[in-house]
Length: 309
Image (cartoon, rainbow, N blue to C red; front, side, top):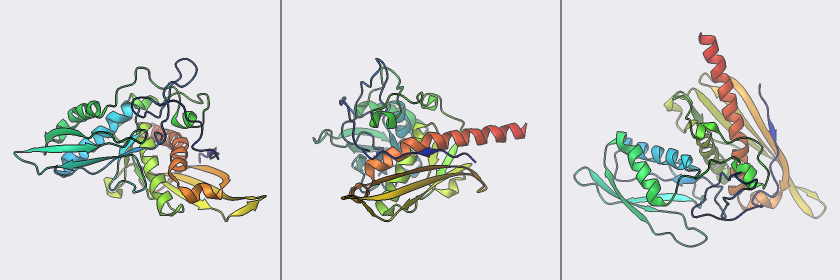
């Protein structure tokens, strides 16, 4: 069993730095300090909502290709159906009925610095999944997300907490892992409706950032699976403050349900922190846990491949 203990930061949403043209949460270490900032909710995963007026195959291919392209451009993004209702960063789609095999789509982007952003229009084939990567490139450009000039050297959690780099950037962001590295992200339990949804979605986004291929349907037959279980303790008074002990355990299994490892995160936090919103906490938790999940899968795959020889 592999076990990693990670502390949850009490000042989860603190230590924000300067903003850039569009939110990129990965940060950099070009001159010894980050030069790309975190405007408000930029550490949250951008949710790519379902696409109307396209065939199911085209819609899935376009959403997946767009998420992959945005991750390459250092924007945490993942499709979800539906998007978490409390997630403020949602890329929504509207469409006129498809005609002659072509659909006219209109994209509504999240507001930037409290200001609305004009929608973006794009016309794509109604049913041509093999063209999705090409359209994702065009759409990422139209949305204003530019490829970074310099690859990141700071993890999202390091940037969020204002720390110096603790590890190199995930190489998988540039070199995707094997096709077999799909991972089923199971439902999270124990954090309440809001927390369960946001923790699962944040983990999906950060696993994609780590180069894995997260899926949310058991019938997709992924060779790996991860599930989060949350324990929130009773509120206790410490002086004039009220705190709760929070413990999160991520269990990684293979396709047969055999445990491969667990990662545990725990800390005592102000009770009001989780009463207000899980959003920033969910992002920090997933950012810290996803590399451990990816490492556990790497070791399991290597052991499996060695045994097959």
